[in-house]
Amino acid sequence: MAVPKVDKKLLEQLEEMGFSLARSIRSLHYSGNTSLEDAMNWIVEHENDSDIDEIPLVPMDINLDATKPFPITEEVKIKAQNLRIGANQLSKRKEKELEREGEKERIQAGKRIMEAKKTAEENARKRMIALREAEKEEESKAREKIRQKFEADKAERRSRLGISPAATSSVQSASTASHMDEDARVKKAFQILPIYIRNVVKNPDVEKYRKIRLSNPIFQESVGSLIGGVRFLELCGFERTNRGQFLYLPREKVDMVTLNSALSALHSAITNPFFGLLSVDSVELP
Image 1 (tube, rainbow, N blue to C red):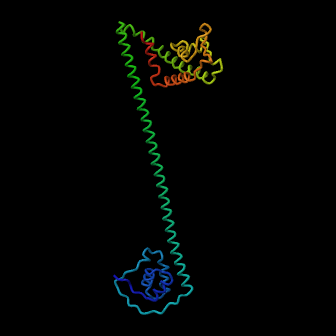
Image 2: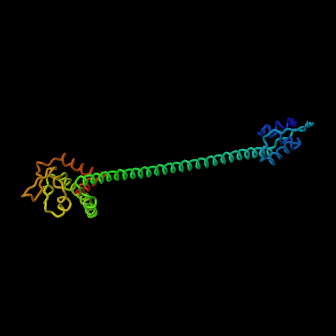
């Protein structure tokens, strides 16, 4: 196989007009090397051929006679210019198509990244929920172990006192409801006590916040009737006055450090997961 022989003068003229060597040889070869116009017409007809810029190979040797030079007219120049413009436009269209494809791929890649991020966040959220559930389960198990320990201790103390399980079963069943009521009262006390103390912290100069009537129904129900309720306020600085009718905190005895420590202790106690368990046990003991 060899490159076909074509008219050199026609080839030079085509190259001068801006056509590539391969395209010029192919057009002259397939147009029969007859004239410059035939070669250009062939280029126009085969402009979109995929192999138009490939040099053809033929197994034969063509014997060419010299042809007369073909004059390059204005029409030929315009046609050549249009062919070059068409080739450039085709190349630009292909570049734009490649850019669009690239942009589509970037958009798809961005979507895949966002989906992967959402999946990772969802998996992290599920792991956090599972961890919290596991912590709750462990906490429940710990509370159950403590409850069983208290039950065992109570049974041992009853045994030492000579109280049979049959004798205490009725007491236990009757006290179950009262224990629940007692637990609710204790929680209410731990909610009321911070109000008394916080009022003094915010308004230490206002006497009405430093004076509590012991016979007040709300105070009696929530704090006064519980063991340790009044004692807690006395530890905060309150004193019994008027023959025990009031709890009063003198202005000069207002200690902000003590009061804030009391608030912190109340908060820590009521937020403890085992809040109320010890008090219930003490009520159940015979």
